[in-house]
Length: 273
Image: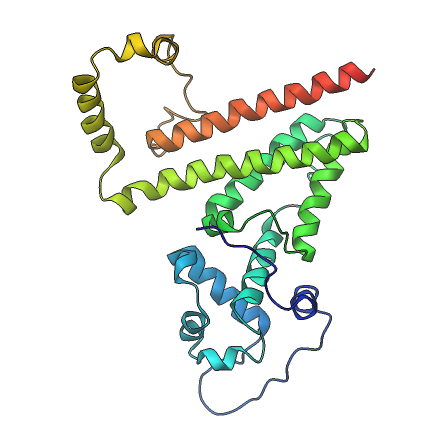
């Protein structure tokens, strides 16, 4: 399911994102119910989406979490469209905006750290991957993330036109890698069969039904036969939890792919000198 942000009233949505309007007055009263606020509503909505997915999100479901009716929420947030924008921007506040542990001149280490942080962020909040990048939310935390990446890329010394395209390359690459990890984690629960069961059943059936598979697809078969796959970093450590094969493959693909992208950036730097 793909969701498009920015479908609410433009001025109201942006005023909520940037908190430029005074918040609605809160009313005290008897009873244990907490006072509502935009932040409380967004936090409850994020928790709901994290636990149950985007499909469970509704004003009523968020109200239930807060012990309120959906109507009580509308005083603070006009509707689900505006709420989605607020949720999306709010979780982006988790991302670092600086990497002081890296040498400012070591753009490669900084970009590697950035990519790892963004990957894990999306794995923590897989519903964010369903929000299309075609129309940005235009919130402060989303902009802070973009500003951070541009700052890191400027250390490469490449011209602005190239940097713009690198932004448009790195974000989709990391999101796509995170989608692969998230899907790998969700597959068993969603289908009712483990990865081992799925592969065992289909591999056996494929070999039986297509005995000439290797001859028909020599490049794919040859690639599978050429040497062992490098172990995932940390794999084999005594205290490490086993990583299921699909997730391990997705993370290793991310690591290798990122390295190739950074090699390309380095080649572009060398080519301009």
